Image 1: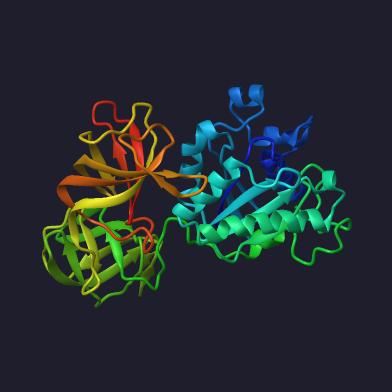
Image 2: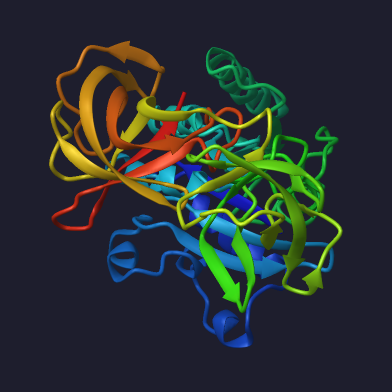
Length: 397
């Protein structure tokens, strides 16, 4: 299954592109096709979205072809809802960014690319849309590609894929367009069907093992420790350490949904047994010996602020990291990040949709990796303890 986060400036045609992709790939029910006049309405599901003609919330749309299953994360393009774009991109395998061939990169397009870079989305595909309004010009397409590549180099983004499309008329969305013979690549759907999957929010199966314990299962004298492998591979006989206690043991059994397994790898959900009787509970981390993360009570992180009230030094929150929740204090806002350029600005607070680098002090240790190494164990959320509202999303660096 491939998770695709789609983003683009208002009126760049993102919702129309998704509607075209679903329509032309025969992924709609008969009642959805009946009377369909506007392809964008397939994803703009909220009443306010239909009235205003914009995407507000992240819409998740599942569909499948004979070759693959997909989850499309349709992210809003309006600057007011930048935080929702970060939500949609956080678990994506691929970011699909639309650019209007006539306007080129807008400030919001730059924000979307910057957020994809900060969230380390593994793959970036740029759809240059509305080619029908530029007479399917190769020169116009190349001009947008050069502009995007220049900005991407500042973000350290490489190996971008560019596809010229007309979402309204269907060119290069599902079928190759005869009106752009100069384009030698695949249409969008074929590109998505062959893109690497299973990377969103998870670490590589080649990385050191990380199993945040979600549940302890007791069956008589037998105990199993269940959770989703954030990274790495576990096999019976592997030596592991339980954190934060630091007690070592060996894996005695690995169980999956179908029963006992010879191995389990990220991002599978498993239950493992240990050879020794150890006090293990929800919130602990089972990790490979010799490659385990350090237990930290101070974190430096990039924080995306989601709360209506601004974040200020001294603020107190609950920090949820994998299956562990601890108390946290915002010690310092080092700087704010200009998401259009990734430049740094001095700041005394972070307002809604702001991104900044912060230092946090924790009431109890968490076992965290750098976000660049393992996205799921390098990320956290901040929660307002009084309202239970999620007010921040962080990436540890």
